[in-house]
Image 1 (cartoon, chains in turn brown, purple):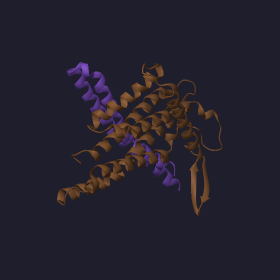
Image 2 (cartoon, one colour):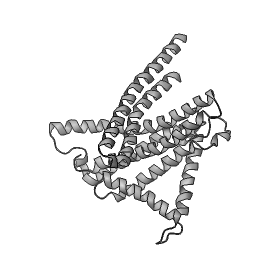
Image 3 (tube, chains in turn purple, red):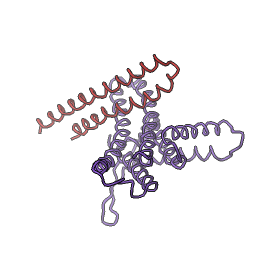
Image 4 (cartoon, chains in turn yellow, red):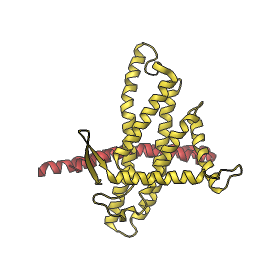
Length: 229
Length: 76
């Protein structure tokens, strides 16, 4: 899919922005922020419907954290929860009829069909789990002791620092992108009802991919801060 | 030029085909594991299905890497 690329020069370097991704990303973020604002405005001891729903969501995050990181896991919940909710909103946005708004190039679809966004999120996860591991263990995070096996394992870990964000980014991007290609192929075959089951499947994929991203983030943080690392 | 485009299309087809083999095997094994678990302990069906979806998504991602490569080949 083409993007609406805007190129500008700042301080002698040329930067290009994918404007459609930026618009849809801000749309998803504003939806999320408004939802969070409305949900936390009037908190009461006896929860209303919306508050009970949000407490269910937070309970889901806490339960998942408890199963994968045994102790002191509440500090990681903000990052993980916002990643999950943002990816979920962003993926589900792809099924909204935003494409009827015509822009100069490309189209308004879910922002996660741009690899730049998913790569940015993957780099955030990389920095976060490296930071969490260094805060927990100090310089021992990189090397326990000077034995042969630990040096080899440190090299493997160094390789993993590249492959983990790469696979995170490409997985999310490729799922959303493949879904859009599939829908456009079905549209070409029969425009009226053929894309409908695929779009329903894409809603399932949106939930699964958000969960997978969250689970892998938790697993990486857990392996960085755990003892057996 | 014409020939290189044809070769790129051939390469794209081969890439997605071999990628799909691995993903199909992976999802098949995951389904087998789910069936085994559910037939042994029917009460864990809900929990096992969640893990199954996670594993299926992870192995499906391998086919999607091949898809991305195929698309890059076609997009030349």
